[in-house]
Image (cartoon, rainbow, N blue to C red):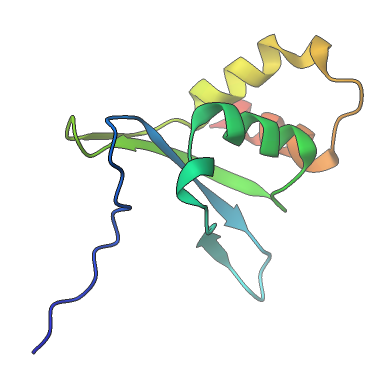
Length: 105
């Protein structure tokens, strides 16, 4: 039997990785969004959220395999976006929904 490929991205540097669980509705359900290795960082995640790259982001998970930790970063990311909200010229509706859901958690 051949070994299964790892689900953990191969990252040559010690850095935090951010993944988004997006809600595609009742029919399609939720799925972890495919993310290129170079785009799995905090700055790109924040930019993608502001740009409306996700339909309905439900949860954000951060992990660092080199340091051996993972955590739910949803509230942390929502708080940062709220602090920076005045910088946004236009806000995608999916971002506003994400911020409202994060407050209710």
